[in-house]
Image 1 (tube, rainbow, N blue to C red):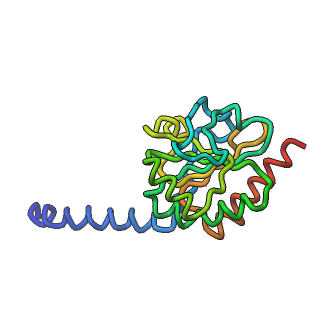
Image 2: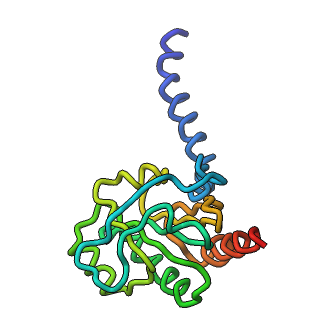
Image 3: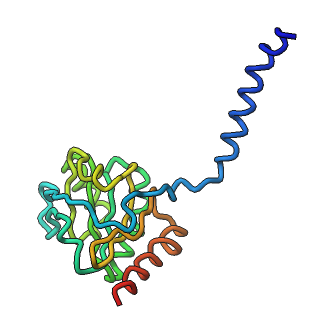
Length: 183
């Protein structure tokens, strides 16, 4: 009897793990909670990306007060960042919010190449060379996108790349809600 228990134990453990993993398959990882939601943006200051001369210098938290803003954390080495970039370009073309970029742990040459190839939708870009600002923002990984209301409060966070659903049903409504909040 004792031997049967020891033989069955690994099977029981594997079955329990399979059930646990299977129950998590449909969970949306882009809805991870953020302790910064409904709180002021953290204090930070970042220089611009070296060599970008087109009016996109670095920025700090004071730039994010007085208007509704979107902050996007990206990197040239990030494949999902390439996939979502068309949504940022489209957002910039709407001219409804200030769009800021945090370029995370990226070489300036690669960041410039990325923006030259795909277009630079950002009003200002900060170079987060060592990831310190990203830590302050509670970034899990790139890409991530935040909506900040006119009072400098983070009202929305998208973890992972923007797609049709998250852009049209998440980000754009969050921007509209932030704009209506101040009225």
